[in-house]
Image (cartoon, rainbow over all chains, first blue to last red; front, side):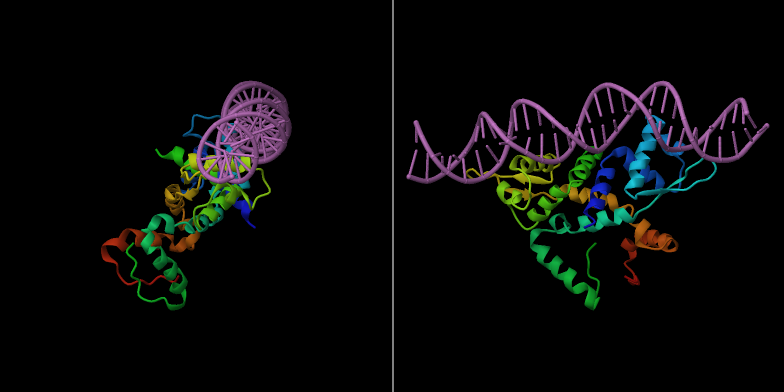
Length: 119
Length: 119
DNA sequence: TTGTTAATTAACTTATTTGCTAAATACGAC
DNA sequence: GTCGTATTTAGCAAATAAGTTAATTAACAA
């Protein structure tokens, strides 16, 4: 199972500071100091958050002189998206349309017919 | 912000036992004993996992005689799906196609033109 | 009342997380 | 080499999390 990876990803994302760091990195690479700047938190604390994100595979780090530029790695986020997608039917539509949705999932691939989705 | 709710949801989902419980509940309501049955874990431990899920709004509980049937509440999962969707562009397509994707997002609604996606 | 089943709470242990400050490391400039 | 900047590591404290067993509450049955 890649259960462990889901564990690490979810628990990494459970911290608002780390989510904010990811949001910042979505706009491009950044150094540790740049990432730390918005937070009322010591640099070592940020450094540890980055280590958590790195161990979860959510960021990677380069080396440029004395800087360690961080960049977003989204593969684990894709796992999250895939996981949560299994539950979409519980919020996406009325219960009546659930069967339709399941059927659509099963038949959409082979045919690829007219795209009549509402959203 | 509903940041706190994201915190609670992500941290609830960071445990494989709790994710398994949700998967079970996706098939329908279940009692605490039914939920505990697959796990090599004491009942109080399961009871606490359920409390975590309940406080995160991921399950709700009824009362039928001495049973407390649990059922899935997917609203927080929708928040997760919305959150992760912001990062889709980082895994969904090559970097070159990212701009196209963003443009598609902005223009898809008004026009609804020909659907020329590859997948 | 007594007994049985379902579930929670209490009390405790252990491990992890998160923050801090101070010290250490890495690198480039001089 | 020394200085200054960037970042990490060490050591500590407080809080949280996750499991255990034993005791308790709640509802039904006899």
